Amino acid sequence: MAETNALPLHIGIIMDGNGRWAARRALPRSAGHREGARAVQRTIEAASELGIKYITLYAFSTENWSRPASEIDTLMHLLEKTLDEYQQSAHKRDWRILISGERDRLPAGILAKMDALVRATAENKGISINLALNYGARQELAHAVNRLMKEGLTAVTPQDISRRLYQPEIPDPELIIRTSGEERLSNFLLWQAAYSEFYFTPVLWPDFNADELKKALEAYRARKRRFGGI
Ligand code: IPE
Ligand code: IPE
Ligand code: MG
Image (cartoon, rainbow, N blue to C red):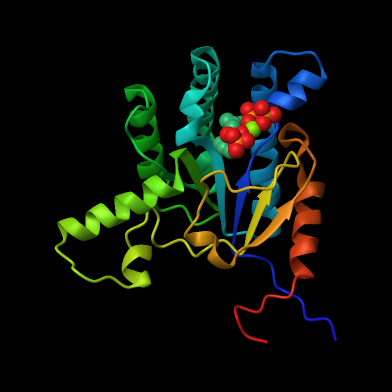
């Protein structure tokens, strides 16, 4: 008897392969990032239509600051454009935007737009889009521990830590997808991924679409989740 998993409530996506997508076409890496931004839009729409409640998108890691300044500029520019587009359309689509990450190093203009967008969409009831921006899981855990110390706790439970992560009300992701054939977490959701199912695909992020998302969900459905039991 094949047991099946329902649709995940929350999926996390490590959107990788923009640079290689561009290199294969002899285009600059920026062209890959632009195309990647289109894939973000498609994927959110598909996830929302399929009934996914939460999607965490790894858009910029704390380690990505080590890239050339020109590439970081491109990424920040695309991010700003995306925030503007969401500000225009999030209400129509009932999307709720959340942000996970550290604020330091992000340009003031982007921080202001992030804050405005989070505030403006806080009451929306559709899909919650958690943008992992300037995000690192170790930084998130250190942030949680610092909060616990400030509160004066001397002993902590796993729940105490979970409640002090960037988005404590979002359930752990049942499924984490990584594109581009790499099979690692790269400092993404280390704590929350304790029992996540992983789906790796060679598809490069700019080529990701609704069909690829459905394939990942299909694979998830067939997984046997045991949580330490039998
Ligand atoms: C993912 O694509 C986008 C970010 C990490 C911001 P990459 O830029 O990492 O693309 P590859 O891995 O070089 O192909
Ligand atoms: C992970 O991709 C970060 C994001 C998708 C934002 P990277 O391309 O930065 O990861 P590594 O360096 O290959 O591990
Ligand atoms: Mg990469």
